[in-house]
Amino acid sequence: MKIIAIGRNYAEHAKELNNPVPTTPVIFMKPDTALLKENKPFYYPEFSTDVHYEAELVLKICKEGKHISEKFAANYYDEIGLGIDFTARDIQARHKEKGLPWELAKSFDGSAPISSFLPKSQFADMYNINFSLNINGEKRQAGNTKDLLFSFERIIAFVSQYITLKKGDLIFTGTPEGVGPVAIGDHLEGFVENDKMLDFYVK
Image (cartoon, rainbow, N blue to C red; front, side):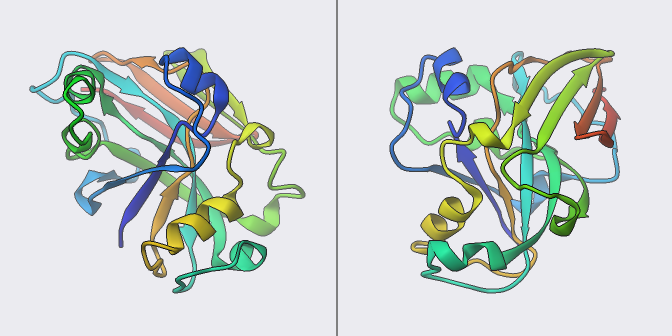
């Protein structure tokens, strides 16, 4: 499986990082070794002093497709979960200054904690889903899918023009405003509506 991530998919997040609001989806990828499952602890990497959390809803692709039409794209995912896109912001900043790719900042081991998944049928409206992230009991991020710049269907259609999607692939759909650093000892709890999906510590 592969992990495809969408950057700058909430306007307020783009603004908080002083990035332009994109007119087409911004895509990057993480390897499967980035996955961190079953609420196992996240171990702070030695190569960074500024790792940030970015909570995101995650789509699980349910069948293979390429060149998918946007009107049929909803048929290509059937479950939704919650993930964290951990980002070594200091490394990312250095690479962006030089116009280099972000992979070292985004793709390191354990940089993609992922929850279990909920069936899409559980949600009455895919574009009115609340999700949030608490750190040490304090709410740090709160988002709603009504604020997505690019819909789930648009993302799937766009990505599939370039990259064949396969069953089991994961798409991180972007983070709302409120990103910030984590520290050793932090307790992260993530929610989709009232369901606690993530509950782990930074070590």
